[in-house]
Image (cartoon, rainbow, N blue to C red; front, top):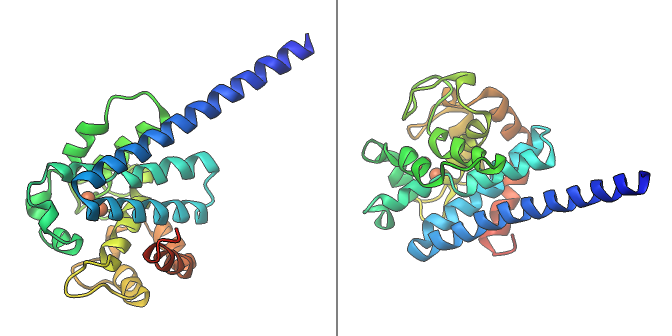
Amino acid sequence: MAADLRAAYASKQDAEAQLRHAELWSVRVLVRAVRVRCRRLAEHLRRTGHYAAELSRALGLDGEEIERIGAGACLHDIGLLETPDYTAAGMSDLYRACQTLREHPERGHAIVRGSDLELFHCVEQVAIGHHERWDGSGFPRGLSRTEIPFAARVVAVADAYDALREPGRLPAPLSHAGATSRLLEGGDGIEPGWFDPEVLGAFARIGARLDRMTDLMGDGRL
Ligand SMILES: [Fe+2]
Ligand SMILES: [Fe+2]
């Protein structure tokens, strides 16, 4: 009897591991598909995924939560695929031109919604919530503070960091110190009040690790 229970438990664990693998694989395939249309967007998604996972780790989340938030970050801007001029714009240009791009969270949500898988539920929350701001000044719903799903609050910081550091930023990508000062003290149209203070605190603590990741990704080593 005990052996039967152990076998059933092991089989359930195997099935759960396979499901997790399939979920993460489907995210990876989607990012590859994005790359076909726009390499620059795919690179932004990939880097933001790494930053968001690292921030999640620093926030003390468990392995599955880290995977979910990383996956959400990897698809957060998938709605930009429907923005005709996207491929001609830099990420920083996009942030300045946000008024014309305000629909991309809803468009992205429409692409990824509908799954009852936990991982894709998180992907949905991030797609629609990553431009919401802690102070309520974001879009599309103008949510504030803890009305915004936690995963979206984490990705918002990772996303902003990458927008400041991405190689194609005009007039030039910022250094880690430059990006950190914009996020923590404001500047270049960014306000620290947009971000969850807990996530911003984690960012301040592990900034050096994110900087190292930027170097590794730039060299293709991550
Ligand atoms: Fe976005
Ligand atoms: Fe983004």
